[in-house]
Image (tube, rainbow, N blue to C red):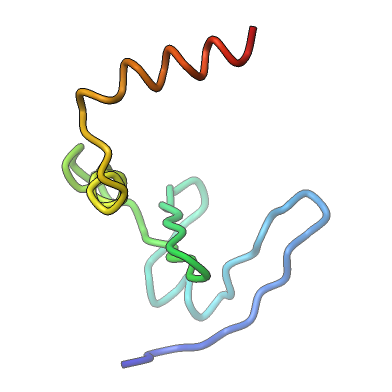
Length: 86
């Protein structure tokens, strides 16, 4: 269910102003943090309100699960990336 649809504009510096109606409804104030989650062609912007590490890393864990990446693969991948940068 869609509650509100607004259009924003991206500035030359890549900044996007959140429309005032949405800021008011979400109680977003200057200096507060938002989380950006990209999933395919969809970009989700979520208000950050003292999220736990579990909540913050959930999208990353889900992406790793989809890709078949295991925690044991991480050291090898880091080593390969560092080797490529040299």
